[in-house]
Image (cartoon, rainbow, N blue to C red; front, side, top):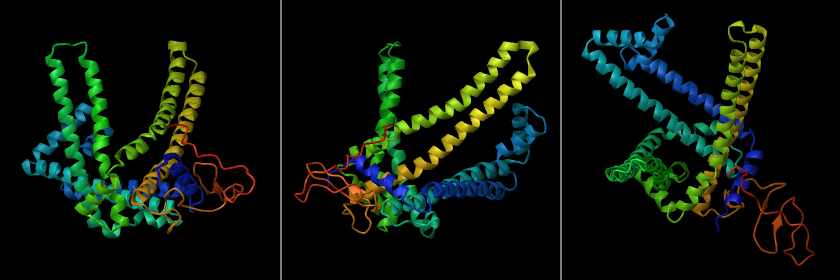
Length: 378
């Protein structure tokens, strides 16, 4: 089956539109559950794993709330820690590392469950909200698979980083300082692209884990097998969301820079004899701009998260070779199939549902559905 990224993304949007409850609400629930779970782990286990000492950052924050400056608070917290002896230092260090691992594993397990929800969504199963917890019953397999995948990705990243460092050091050794900054920038770009390209082989591990029941090295090998010949397609699919990231950054930056500029303009205009009414008005306008930008960014993220994960779920079904319409498969005819949906194909004929009759049956030519277009931000 020929790969068509625009058609894939079109089908995912249709699936999101016709899934109830809305994927945006499910994503909001997912974000709240992950955040609350992370807070509980840090709060409860943080004290247990560090022998009641807690994290150094928490102690520093307590002293800062009492009126100490940051440097003074850090000094007092470290002094208090070392007074407790080497055992307390070891407890805090190892407890902090253990806590970080537990938090990462919790977030990873929930992330796999969320991907399972998105896979069910693009297959037209209309999954319930509770689907995001689907990975927890197989927590052990999920964690082992995630750890192994992370190790392989880290090793590939180190290899690419080492290669880029060798190239940069060799360029510096040539004693051409005016070229070094450019080479450093190009090295950074090549390293990011190289890591993304090499780790693309593991992009389908989570979907294989829950859909095929494989785990550990079996899931990793199956993902690598399915990505053979598809790494470039997967890379371009991931790259196609780059524009959305820029849009979110632009809106977020506007919500910070514009209010700051408004307030600074008031301060610079009035100096020591500033007009408090004008300053309060500027502060109110700045607050509204910042709040509006925050709301827009939040909504975009809540929409973009199921969209991106749904596209990867659909890519998984395509790589697996699920026939369109077979068991709700999310290929280029899978997913939700109802009024307004259609399967696009190149050529003189096109068939659709709710889009007007096609001309494939020898009848008079009528309006054919247009070819789906990719996102305007790609």
